[in-house]
Image: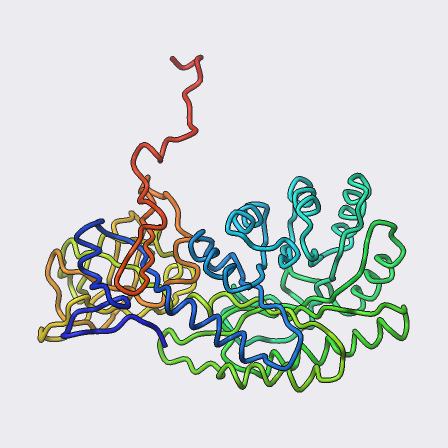
Length: 419
């Protein structure tokens, strides 16, 4: 459920008409619902009642400070993959001991920053990384709390670009390598082993792959205790639960949680979960304005002011996002590509889509863009990045100002030898 609803054929976000916001701040812009974000977190967290848990929002899905602050206020944890996400998380008020640091390419400065901040643990992806973190912790006279990310070779049945748990993926260490890693970790002076980590992919619409991954991890946890004497405290099963963009039927939260609750019963572990898309995906839309209509031979185009630099998912993954009029009309249906202003044939938001006919200046809503929308945007073609707006009840607030042309050249300089 989300709080984008039609009232008398006009789209509202909670109690604010979307076209009022567009008239006052211009287009394009991302729009988020405070009520939807709150509801999604509470529903997710409550599905795991009965087990020790820490729900850590996956920051890479949406790092707007207002959204991070909302989750921090709900006593959520944070899953990060960069020093920048750590900085944002701390600025938003997350407790450092509720932050886990994932990712395959942590730099020395990022490792030091996380150690000094006192995060809960690092999710390690290689033995080289383990050795480096031990070295950096030693220089700071600390012990780094770690988990090793295990690649269980489970097929998540999702888009190959967002599959992360197969042998051919760059993430994690296979089971045999993980045993070697834990053996090494146990011998290092500045390492404290507290967890085990697994993440198999994103936009997963079946519960089975999660259960398969957990069963593999459970076997390894028992091996670690019996063979190495390592007692795991935290099992981090990542995120990846999908949402409905078109006709997907992801498992209910109850069914998803059941895969973990039944399999962890009696194991005396704290479960860490890293939801991203499922919390924010359907809590946001991208609002764009029609610039032109163009009829070609066998193809109709609706040209809008949002492009692939604003929303990359359709171009990158051929991802589907529903597109709805801000004001519904009785106009006939047409089949058209919805495209942006970027000088690339891959600049599209929809291809061969059935839509009601539109005119220049009409407003459209690209649905389910709260996850991996603004965070993946760029300044390609020297286009300023769009505004972000949050609605709560009958009020809205610009939580990220639209960039200006001056912002595009901020930090750049022409060398004196060219003057």
